Length: 77
Image (cartoon, rainbow, N blue to C red; front, side, top):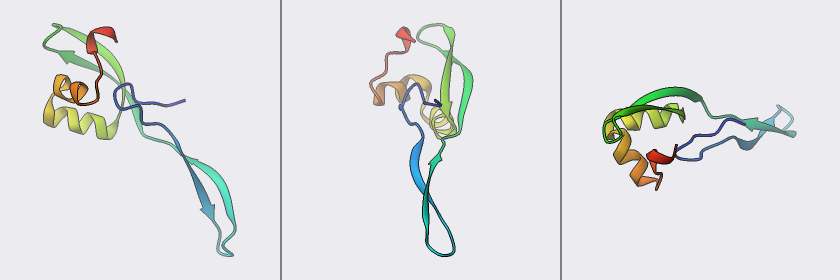
């Protein structure tokens, strides 16, 4: 199952709705990418599964600040 290592975001249950308003179940998947990120505090690369939203936020805030907001210890990954 695709899941973000930092935020824990994963697939959601949703409905396909037909023209006659019949609802059938389906999954909405998140766009998860595998990325090697440089962590300056650890002085090494770590490989993470991240959603594209996570990647954009990391570019803005930095990997350490973003992980701290979600209570993730990058040294354990």
